[in-house]
Image 1 (cartoon, rainbow, N blue to C red):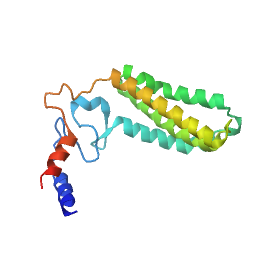
Image 2 (cartoon, one colour):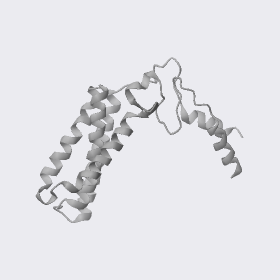
Image 3 (cartoon, rainbow, N blue to C red):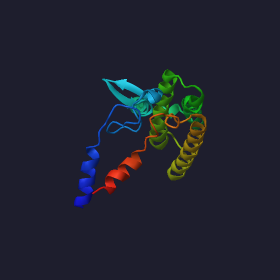
Image 4 (tube, helix red, strand yellow):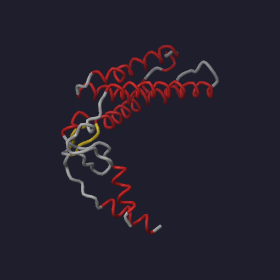
Length: 180
């Protein structure tokens, strides 16, 4: 037990140098010019564009769901509406403009929250609730896999050609954790 505490303490003492391959605490992207298209800067701190936009979209959706007249929304309209909100995320690997990425990720956050909350609680489901939620989970999982495959096949990793070397947080963690 004491060894684990010492290893975490050593890990916290690792320098966070703002150079290529460096990670700030809580970050999952290096904060360098090669990852600039993945970052937005707020108050002098780099934040992940995707995560920040997703969070903003989730808050927007959660705060506006109660204003939708759900009694008038059919299942077909609900499906088409969510697919339309999801479409920019599917197109985003081919459009790398930062403004489009922000819009696509914000809509993805809105879509995800709206999908689960409205589909589970507000929409009149055509089947028993457990069957409807299970079908929602299957559709969500399939669309997630499809969008992830599209994205990974179309967008190169900027760290692969970095002259500073490929950052490997797991390797650093394993090295520090193993040194007692």
